[in-house]
Every structure is written in C-alpha cells, then in structure tokens.
Image (cartoon, rainbow, N blue to C red; front, side):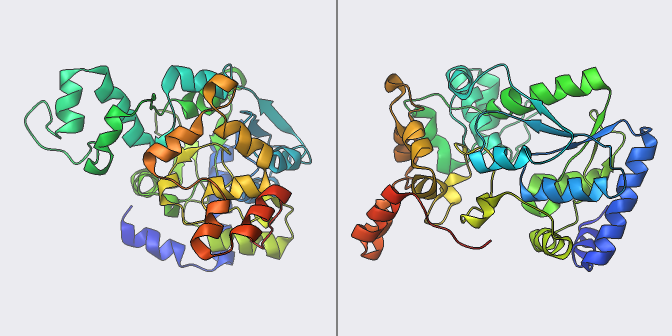
Length: 326
C-alpha cells in the first residue's frame, strides 16, 4: 500500500468507511471460521469497533485487560457490556516498575535508555551513537533530547505493556485459539501508519495475525459514528479526557498541553493522583520525582499560578470536578 492510498481512504465519507471496514471484518471472520475476538479497552475506538463487529456477528466475544490502571469510569462502563472476557496480569504496577522501570517518553526511547544502561558496547554503539554493526548509520537511536535520562536516579523501561496487557492476551489467544480484531488507527502514530502501509487492515501473514479494520478512520469518524448510531460510551470522555489508556502512563506526557494528564487527574480523581505522586517508600508510585526530573507539570494549582487564578484552581482541585464535552 502507498501513503497516498491511506490519505485517500481517510478522506472517504463515513458511510463508505463503514462498508469497507465491514468487508475487512467479514474477510477476517470467515478466514478464521469465526474464531476471533475484539480487543476491548472500554475506550471510544474499541467501543465503536465492538458495535460494528457485533452488528454483523453478535456472538463475538470482547476481551478486556483489567490491569488495575484503568480509570474507574472505564471499568464501570465495561461492566455494562455483555460477553466480555476479563483478563488480569500476574504482576501489579508497582511490581512492574520494580522489574522494568517507569514508562516515560515513548516505548522506543525508554527501551533504548534501558538497554544502554545495561552496558552492552554493541547496544551503546547502535542506540547511542547510531552506528550499526556493519558500519552504516541509523536514525533509530536515542534522541539527543533524552540522553540526560541515562543518568536519571530511577529505573526506566518499556516493559509495562508487555507484562500487563500483552502477556495475558497472548495466553488467552493461545488457550482459546482465537485471533484478534483491534481498534487502532493509522492516524495515531507513525508506527501504526507504517504497519498499515505494510499489511493493510488484515495482517494474515504476520507472525501474530491481527485485524485493524478501523485503520483508515479518523477520530472525527469515531465520534460521528457514536452520535449517528447512539452508541453508549464511557463518561470519562465527558470529563475532558481525550485518551483513556492507563491512568498512570507517562508515555507522551511531555507532549501534553496544560492541563496535562496529571493536572487533570488531580482535578477529576484526586485519590488516584495522590497515590501515584506519593513517595515509593510510603506505598505510592513515586511519580512526582519522575515528572519533576523530566519537567512535566503535574499539580493543578500551578495552572492558577500561570493564569492568575490560583485560588479558583486550587479549589477545583480539592472539590474534584471539572467537566467538559468531548
């Protein structure tokens, strides 16, 4: 596939996108004789995907990874959906941090920091200096912007998704014999764009086959579908959140505009905020020092300092409620 084809697909009206997505779903379902499942996070994208799949095949199960890191509104919403398989990881988030380190910046950058810190000279040459074993240069190396993180006084790594989501899902797939349909879209990242260009929506030949029938959709399509078909969704989106993954995830947090995800968390879920900021020794996640080290604002009252309304912002943070439409 070519990039121009993706752009062309993304510009299609919703009716055509729905028809094309249903065709991909049908191809996938029939190829595996119905032994498929929908990867269901409780977020808007997978909610639309599940509605679309079940409009064709009502008995397809949804699989939800209950990591313990979801917003309570997400878990409450998932409980309202029928035929959902709940999976749980073997480790909690504190154990994951102890083993792998904090998930910061992005998966690739944090993984490269972890590998460089191990001290392997080959990894140092490739991921720090960008020189491959054959002498060629590569752009797949640690960004100069984040090289100071090598000396951070805390562990950094990208193992959380593997431990808390991928392992339980892999076990389910192996035991059930089912293959996944997931709600990712190419517009979400360069990596997902490249995946679509390589395999299209249905990766039949991949090492781990996966269907992504919404790949050529845009976020506006998701909301239009929800409104048009009156699809119930988690109320977390009515609280100002655009992304509803793990509540404590720091991947991409440095790109947040204020209020950052953690400033918003203090306003909407003050108990969760206090837990993730509390010192590690006191039973929390110790994320305050991590965010301070990177320079990510995490206290809601500082919004008031910036915009000259400290008193009101402080009161909002204590009362715990700011809502806005999606």
